[in-house]
Image 1 (cartoon, helix red, strand yellow):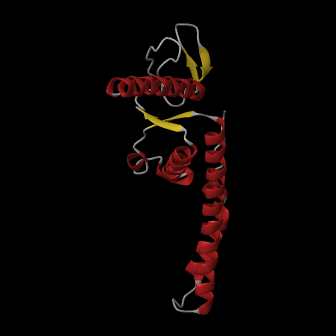
Image 2 (image 1 turned 180 degrees about the vertical axis):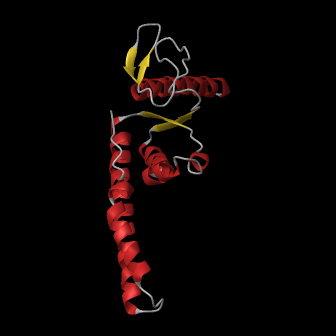
Image 3 (image 1 turned 90 degrees about the vertical axis):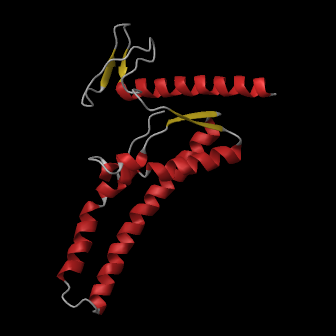
Length: 177
């Protein structure tokens, strides 16, 4: 299942800029018009946050209803949000989405597994060979003959790791019992 990134923050940039300019033009810091301009900016930010939350709730519910096992990368979101991709990471709000997915999966009796994110986009899901490639290369081509989109290949690798992790936890629970 392919899910598009809506980029709500990016879509609202024009409205945000306009609202921020309105605030910047107000000379008197305590004026009624400045307070109104601040409220307008808050309203735009709140609208973006509500759009993002609505999408995340709907998507997490759909995933939990349709799948018994959900495997995700155990990403260092705090580290990602400090780098060059910070704005994009914050716009998607991965941390919030993963928390939503976790509590909904737990309530529905589904299994959410976090797998090691290392080399997921460079490993072949077919033969497990590693092929280093730049992020700009969007197609995964392997010597074993597999040619698919890089994101699809990474998703298959994550699912494979999740299934192996699930099998290991089942083995451990049988040994303990």
